[in-house]
Length: 169
Image 1 (tube, rainbow, N blue to C red):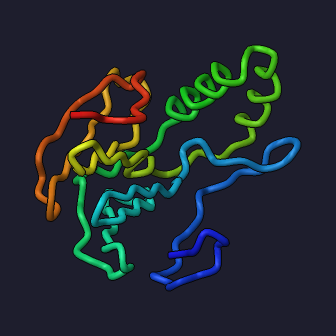
Image 2: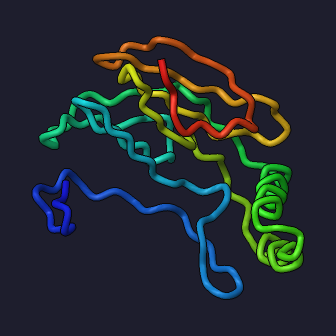
């Protein structure tokens, strides 16, 4: 945990940063790599390292509590997953960037597995929503919803095209 000036109040462990890959002009996040996510609600802080479906849980004093598990299966990455990530990047950056992006992606190694999770969101009622990593060619992605004390509330399939920023009541 840190103060506003980033000086440490307390340390609760060291966690790996996101997977990176060198690209022309610098380096950037590996599109099929682990990217840590953090979500905070009124009484808990959650950390997903994305290397599995485990969610680390801390109280707001930094004390580690029992972890949650979104029970996402381990999925082998395929070339199609990397190609889909490339096309999402081109859609975001625009057609003018296509050649540069295609060159970068052609040099990328294929990950053995897809990450276990992609995102964490806390809703208006303090439920934690955990998104599994979206699979290429699948129209939906699974979200696991945990209530108070880590109780499993629901498993929901939402469109992969839906980018969730906020969940109200």
